[in-house]
Length: 51
Image 1 (cartoon, helix red, strand yellow):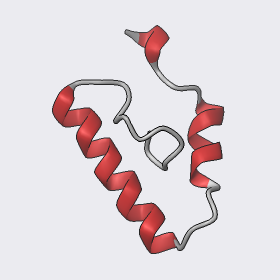
Image 2: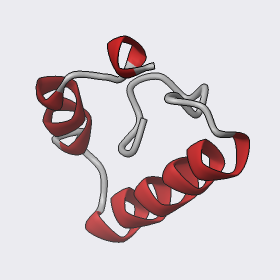
Image 3: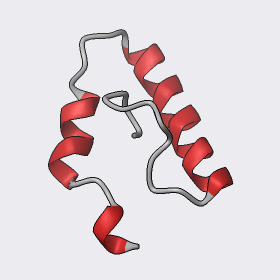
Image 4: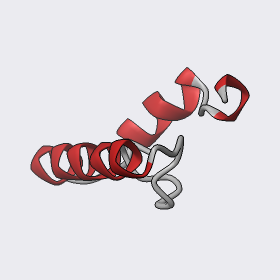
């Protein structure tokens, strides 16, 4: 399972997306909640904060 996790570099790259901080925070929470709820390592929204 550890081999399927995104790299730390990808996490920080996704957080640098040009969008308002409020929207970025919402996506971070939403996408991480999806990953927790499904037990997956990816939320399915590639390139978004939290994925």
